[in-house]
Image 1 (cartoon, rainbow, N blue to C red):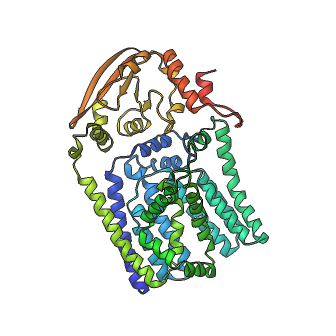
Image 2 (image 1 turned 30 degrees about the horizontal axis):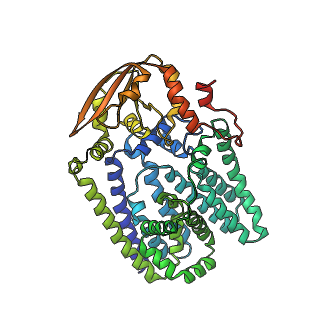
Image 3 (image 1 turned 90 degrees about the vertical axis):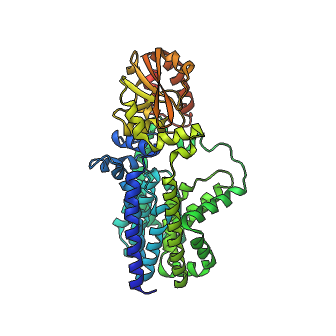
Length: 496
């Protein structure tokens, strides 16, 4: 394949991807997690519960233009094109035809072609990729400023998700293989990175260590040897990058490694393979999610370009078919009427809520109360986006999505009226009654299902504090003694 043919195919992939992304981003309702990150964006802060804050900051900037779903998802839409541009820029100095083929293959990879949902992984993937790109440029130009810039971008990745530490490990191993003369360059990267790491750690120190508690303490459960988990992870990796790409990389591994060494692109092998090796080792004892590996997958496409030309052409053809298959599957899933599952009442009710949230919000907007709540962060976040009110969480909730702990001060709700939306069409009055003078139950009907609603009159803060907030403190804010505690808003607000 010559350059003109590769260029034309790239333009085809580009013009296929953009309308698809805009259609999906504009028509799919926000997921619970996406709506939760919108709440982050609407409450700008140096940090949030669950994960570090970068995705909330990015969505906040986008929402200066509009709060429409497309703008909320703009970081995810743009990130895939930054990856494609970066892969082309890295490879084009050596072979523009192969650069276009690798970039086209990345662009058609279903997870990047159809992936418009905005998550913490979006900010992680973008900042890590830009960090590696800056480090590659620093190596080729011997620029101290670019080494520092790479470190700053790595620090931003750390402000996205703590998996960025695996890229730092890859950097350390990369520089160590270059001998002692390269260690000062690692020092420049750390000079850019560590202030942002310190910023996040100090915020945690003054905010109950919520990121550390969520990500590292009590999350993984007991380690248990499971030889099947690495095979499952391998299957997930094969699905993400396509089986053909993975097989071709393995089949031509010697030739690929030789070309990477000769072209000075070993950095990308470290950036991809070191974190993946860690995940495969961890998968022997813990379950590893498919989204965990996404931040390191783009570097495989730089390695992929080292394949022989015939393998690249085969990969391009397969990826086009692979992409079309996923487009058909997604379109079919979206066109299936919800009523096909109405016999399964619980599943149908959840589908109506998450796929028709504006209809649910419209029904609920006719109620008037001082505060609005559900038992779930996901449902509350979705309703907060699609209704005219902020919705909080009433009850103990789960370990996920606890930003409402900071936003809502239940002391201020004492004696007030709270509208509560149940998960289903039954209301657990025994659970709600102790926290109100009395309840006014009702029900809303949407399509062919219903949801139980209760207007709680006269919220009893004292009872809620002793029965619910005390449980939350024990489950989620019982900070281990080895963590030095500066301040904790939850302790100070309710128990001091």
